[in-house]
Image (cartoon, rainbow, N blue to C red; front, side, top):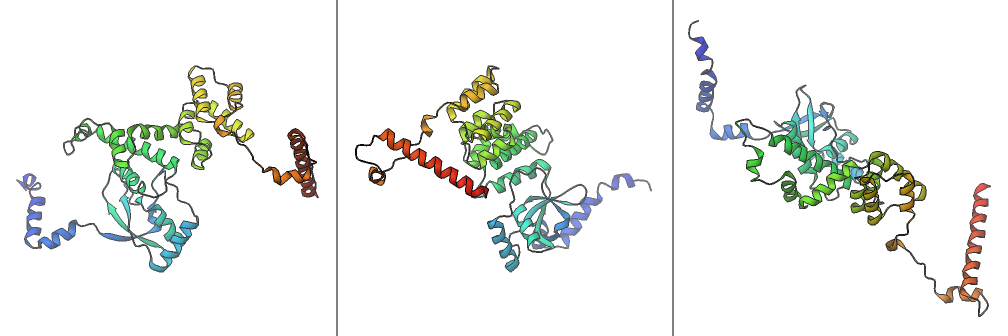
Amino acid sequence: MPGNEGQKFVIPERSRIVADLFTTQEQRDEDRREKVTHISLSEIDDFPDQPFQVRNDEAMQSMVESVKLVGIQTPAIARLKEDGRYELVSGHRRKMAASLAGLETMPVIVRQMSRDEAIIALVDANLQREVILPSEKALSYKMKLEAMKRQGQRTDLTSAPLVQKLEGKTSRELLGEKTGDSHEQVRRYVRLTELNPQILSMVDEGKIAFRPAVELSYLPAEQQAALLETMQTDEATPSLAQAQKMKKFAQDGKLNEDVILSIMAEEKPNQREKVSIPRERFSKYFPAGTSMQKIEDTIFKALDMWRQRERNRDAR
């Protein structure tokens, strides 16, 4: 019919007006309020590459027992994906606990979020945890900075450019203000993502200190692999000074396996350990006037004999 083309743009607005006439403000506010929906666990996907580890440890087992008693009390946050499934933004530990407790569904708030908005929300939610591993912090900082950078490139009319919102602040500065870390500390954490995964695990385990690990992140992958092999063989890790020396050799193109071995063989003054035994503990085993060198030699000879005896017993 003639004129129909112009009417199709009017109908949505007219429908809204009509709806407003027959609903109260309270009902309209309720429609806008976030709702908790119970969704099947089988329909909820974990967030891809999310950096926060979900472990079936003692704390998880405690959570499972709580879930069995009272259920999931705090709803998870998820976004609806293009394929109709749900993508978890926060609540990965709750999802595992629900699964281990035998639940089929869990309470979820579904929000309309872009992938970058979801990344930022995921990182912000998990950084509130009491215990965060260095690797988790490093990977999450990198994810959020990359998402913030992509958001800053937006030029649509509904969102002011990020650079205007931040009044000239860098993404690292903004992230630092949010987390309490300086922008330089944020940079150091992001550097950890350049580490060999096994070396990064050693940082999580406390075997390698944070600052030496940052310096080691500048080593090329091949040299990190050589260092890892040396550390495993010698059961030793580099000090900050040794890590800085390796970084300098690498920057000059002179770092190789032999240089790594040489640097790792250097004595670390801050790691020298002395064992002190009160003289009265061993003096009764030696005649008066026995020299300390003789006492030391005898003690080590006895220790060698004891070690050999233990090896022979284990071999039986």
